[in-house]
Length: 200
Image 1 (cartoon, one colour):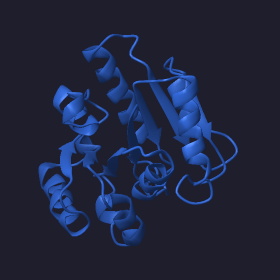
Image 2 (cartoon, helix red, strand yellow):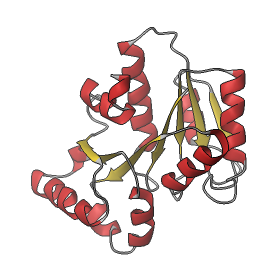
Image 3 (cartoon, one colour):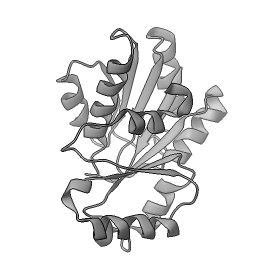
């Protein structure tokens, strides 16, 4: 079971990008390709899982805690349950907006031996305002990620997008960066980068 963790601060566009990714995956392969989605949300009511379910996808939800801290023990259990009961080819874990994806991945590695791919979504339209007050969290979220999506690119001009790209050099090194937006579909190349070359 291939596992992808999608992280990023609140409002960065994770759910929209997740839906576009699933659409692209289903276009490129058999429509019956088993894809499972695990939502990690803080609170007693899930919002994103309702949105995803409205698109016809089955969603498992972990509520009332963060999968990298208070629910750390429940994440591997939930993943193993999904693999056992649903046996999907792909599991996408959408992390809560304050989670640290690399910590979630490490928890899964230790408990299940899995090697999740980490994709972090950055809101290009709010990056300049967020990067100083949220520096510690953003550094943690970007740590050890495989892909960074400079999302909501349609809401900024080329100069601002270049600023976001340059300033990310101070937060992470080595991740593949791609430009995405809700106004356009997710390209095949972008989907392949998020998933990893072996999924192309």
